[in-house]
Amino acid sequence: MTGYARIPLLIGWREPVGLRDTYGGVDGVVALQAHHLKPETPSDTLVVFMHPMGIMHYLPLPGALAAAGVHVLTAVSRYPNNDSALIMEKVAIDLGKWVAHAREKLGYARVILAGWSGGGSLALFYQAEAENPQVTATPAGDPPDLTQAALPRADGVMLLAAHVSRAHTLTEWLDPSVTDEADPTRRDPAWNLYDPACPQPPYGDDFLAEFRARQIARSDRITAWAEATLADLKARDGEHAERAFVVHGTMADPRWLDPAVDPNDRTPGRCYLGDPRLINDSPGGLARFTTLRSWLSQWSRKSHADGIACGPRISVPVLVVGNSADDACTPSHTMRLHEAVKHVPRRLHIVAGATHYYAFQPDKLAEAVATVTAWLAETRGA
View 1 (cartoon, one colour):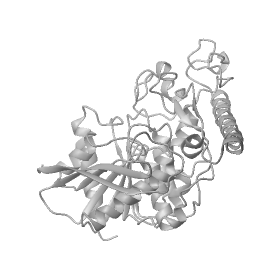
View 2 (tube, one colour):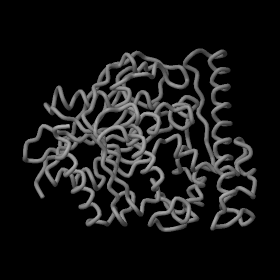
View 3 (tube, one colour):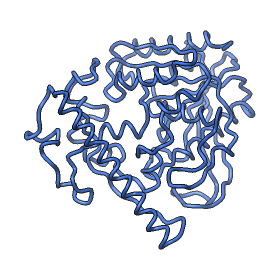
View 4 (cartoon, helix red, strand yellow):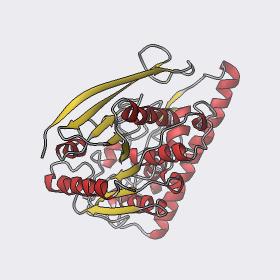
């Protein structure tokens, strides 16, 4: 263990004024915060944690890594703890600003992206666009053009308790029993996991296949509605017209009720937010509040921030760490990510018995720290 300083950082810049998607601040000015966890021992390597909307300053792993001598930056996007209007392409711009700051201002020669949970697909999306930019606009046709952003490349990617993307994850969690987006009380009991009329665990293969197909169909219906509504609004009110809406029923994954579906060591009947039956419609559920553009950018199956699609486009070493008792990012996500980067030097490690955050699991946290520090040493010359 070593001592480290926690240094708050703030960076900012001006962008052309367009659609306003964050509250407060000076119009056209983007300001980002971070914590620089700087151990006493110097290093030329900085590990940058960033989630699309999460603030990771006090999660167990970043601090534990710093205590082990790893220099860490816990960076925050322009959407801190609020993803209702989040645009993934803008988050990539934000991450690029932190990578550039790490090299140009903080003096680190080697920058490693640490993609925790939803940060995993962000890291792959960012690195793919930094190495071989292809995205010229958001799925709604808006800026930024990432092919003109000159995003600085990172030197490695860590996928830590990560899922394949926000879009794929939400699709796998959508409640297919919702038959009317405008009236969430109208649900088909045959497909409502929390209705006694629905088949109960263990679920059969045919039920699961149809359930997944209905989840995809619901997602695509919302996407088609969002695209049509946005086109109508733009035609009537101009290019910056927008609308917010509520998505009900977003926490209905059979995995949480049937431990035989994508099996690991998780506790049946729970998800990482608590009781999924309650979270399915609560204000704290995934993607509850969103906008037309944000749905298209981060939640729809047209999202560019797809870890599976972006993984084959990167060329740097990758570490994949899964937690065997994770009730958010289950084994299929871990293995799909590992498969997506099979063309680069990669390492896979599963922390047996670990939950999503290593909460109250100091031994599991220590194992994760040892895995990361060993990989950082092994890949130094890669």
